[in-house]
Image (tube, rainbow, N blue to C red):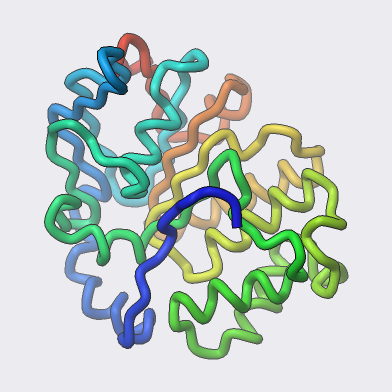
Length: 240
């Protein structure tokens, strides 16, 4: 697997039971960020960023390359640590409960975080076991059907087209039915069919009172799909 990316936290508690335990957190605000700051060396990337995202809402995040969009999503996913600020996700303080938060996030980044030499089904089975999911085979079949890759379940990832790999990465992200999706330019390089699948899944997620943050350079997609639009510029989030 490429990179060092924490998408999950192993646990003896079945995910279904954990989600029941955490259900009390699924009210109010999905994500709350206050005074977030992040610099790399002497270069500030995020400066005093504040954000409130309600449950069931889709936020499209615009910004030029290097504006900090990817950095923000990586911070939310606990891949990198902020310099300062407070992040509350589903009622949990990220600084105190990162493990609980990771299990309710689904992340699609610039890398697909899939094993090239495993098949589509084998990749999903691997992640399903890490999330300690029950009825993994049924869930894998369901997800592969949703992303229109059921007929390619036995193909190795390296044999798939770029668009198919991105769809499988989306399948990996939704396999455990996360409450929040973090999508970093997921529409890039997708054909119209794949774009339609991404849109349908996004609509389904928000209709079930789940939340999404998606970074994008595509203004048509961002404006038409989302409930809210913000622009990240000079390290500060601005409402369009």
